[in-house]
Each structure stands twice: as structure tokens, then as C-alpha cells.
Length: 412
Ligand SMILES: NC(=O)c1ccc[n+]([C@@H]2O[C@H](COP(=O)([O-])OP(=O)(O)OC[C@H]3O[C@@H](n4cnc5c(N)ncnc54)[C@H](O)[C@@H]3O)[C@@H](O)[C@H]2O)c1
Image: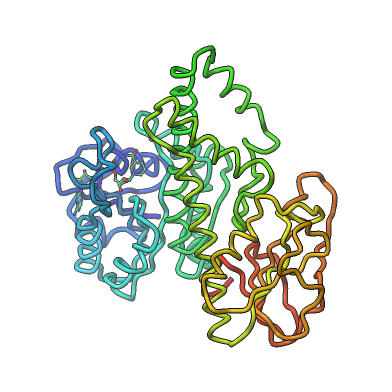
């Protein structure tokens, strides 16, 4: 097995040396590099003597966009892709046979499909395989990763993804999780993994700011208590995208916290950001329903008005928030919910085809209790309906189109 590396920098050189413990590894860099185990050579030799070509070149941010100086006021900018495009051009130029090209550099979701695949000669195959690696522990991180992400064109375990897993299995020390998705999904997993960390650090440091302003608070008492909250906070609960946060407590708590941020002059308002995002997410879903309703000339029905199934409470309901945005359009809107304590626009039955939002999902809401709560339709859905399921759990419904909101894969 011959492996080639284009880019022998902070990430590429150490990774190439890890591979070199098992395989023959050649590498090329535009700057002179040295290694005891990797043969540093020309691009031509690196490419033609290797079956697999790993690209580990920089995807730089523009000056001032690394976070070491204030940047939140600056125009958002994508990473630079010149080096990756240059590496791809190098493969195109020198490869005399089909190659298995693996990009490990970090790029934003959608980049591979839009920018790289269109450039790579079609005789080559391409995987996106970003690493979760930190400076100072590159070699250890590489063989003890939290997961290995392998992006393919259609997201399925095709031959090439399996082949790469076989290679990694020969060097890994921790029997890692392998995640195979589309190129775009793996780009998203990698970048949002980092965002989750940034958000977490941003939240605990916000509590630190409140501790400093309010007094009589040791931030560690608060964050330790939250850190041990494995039932809802430190675990997979709330990791299923769907309807927004709702109910008698959460929305109003965040809305009130906006006041506290102002009262103590914290200087920023994360609660407003969270609540604003929640509202725009509701509007996005409302607009999506309205577009289908107008296109198909169907009324809209929200299946579930209470903020969650099996309770009557409509306080803080995300269904009514979506309804608010739907009402800005000239379409018919009703709710069906046998328990809802707010009966405005609630009907018992719908006798015509409709665009139906499956707002309630008992399994998602109550799964953590261990109880097996099957979902039930609150009314008999008429053929010709379009059912939008934001939880992506609903199977086929005879005579109806079922749309899994949030899944835009060509093939599932
Ligand atoms: N460093 C990390 O901890 C880390 C972790 C995960 C992901 N990444 C990602 O990996 C990528 C590389 O990061 P890095 O830290 O190794 O960067 P780096 O700048 O240290 O190394 C990149 C190397 O590529 C070489 N290079 C640049 N253009 C080239 C070209 N056209 N042909 C051949 N070689 C070329 C450079 O000379 C350099 O040696 C980035 O996308 C980065 O975001 C880095």
C-alpha cells in the first residue's frame, strides 16, 4: 500500500509519519520538509507512486479572521481554497492512472461538491475525511480519534469508504466510530463539532460574567452542577432537530434573561440570539409549509397545538409560533389536537387533503423515560395530503407525500 501526501505542514507531516509506521509514504510540499520515515519527493513521484493521495494543505482564513483580535463586526468570509485547488490540479497534471484522493483539510459544508469535484479529473475518486486533531497531540489524536468521518458522494458505504476504513483499522489504537456520510454531511459534522465546543465555552464564560457582575456566585458551583446533568444537558437528549424549544419555562426564561443581561450590563445578549434564531427557524418552517400549500392549493393543518404531545398546555408552544408566521400569508390554517387548552383555530377533523405539519412526536419527546410511546394520528389523513415531518420519523402514508424536513440527501 503506497500513500502520498500533498502538504506536509503541522497536520500533514505528523499524519504522514503515523501512516509511515505501516505503509510506504511519500510526500510533497511547496516548502522544503524533512522526515525520517516519509520520503519527501517531487509531486510527480508522490502522485504516481501512490494509490492514495491525502491532501493536507491549508484552507486559510483572511488576515484578522482567526479570533485573536475582534472580528464579529467584520464581513463574514469563507476559507481560502487556492491551495486545495492547486493540489487537485497537481493530481490532475501528474496522475497517469486513477487515484483515490482524500481531502483532510477543513472546509465549510457544500464546498467539496461545488468547488472541488468539478475540478478533479473524473477518473479519480474523492473522499472528504477531516480530522479532529489538536496541535501538540497530532500523532496521538490521529490514532485515538473520537470518530472518523468519511464523506462520499452519496453518503453510502461504497467500496472506497470501506477501503479507507480497512486502512485506518490497521493504525488505530482505540477502535473508533466510523461515520460515513455525504461529502457535505462530513463537512458539517467536522465544522459543527467545533461550533458545539465554541458554544459550550461561550455559555460557561457567560455564567462567569454573570458571577462577576451579580456577586455571591462561584461560577464553578454552577457549571459543575450543569456538567453533572447527564439526563438532559450532557447527553444525546435534544440532539434531534425538529420543532423549537417550547413550553411553560424555557422560552420565558430566556426572554426574562435578556432583562438580566441588560440589568447587569453584561455587554452581550446570548438569550436574544437564541430566541431570535428560534423565531426565524419557526418562520423558515412556516414559509416552507406556505410554499407547498400555495403550490398545491391546499390548506395547512398543524398536527399538535400544545407545546408537546399528551399535555393540554399551549403556553410557549412552537406550533402557535409557526402558526403566527403562517397567518402572515393568505392560506387557510387549522390545528388538530385532542387535548390543547387553547381551542382557537382547533378542529376535530379535516375532511380534505392538506399540508400537515407533524408537530408532535411522542417517541422523541418521551423516549428518555424508557416508555415506548407510539405515535398516533389525531385524525384520518386524507389521500393527496403532503405531510411534513420535522422529526423525520414518519414512514410511508398511503396516498400521501411524506417530507422529512431537514433531510435533503438525494438518496437516504
Ligand atoms: N493543525 C491542526 O491541528 C488541524 C487540525 C484539523 C484540521 N486542520 C486542517 O488541516 C489543513 C492543514 O492545516 P495545517 O495546520 O497542517 O496547515 P499548515 O499551514 O501547517 O500546513 C499546510 C502545508 O501545506 C503546504 N502547502 C500549501 N500549499 C500547497 C500546495 N499547493 N501544494 C503542496 N503543499 C502546499 C504548506 O507549505 C504547508 O506545509 C487546514 O485545512 C486545517 O484547517 C488542521
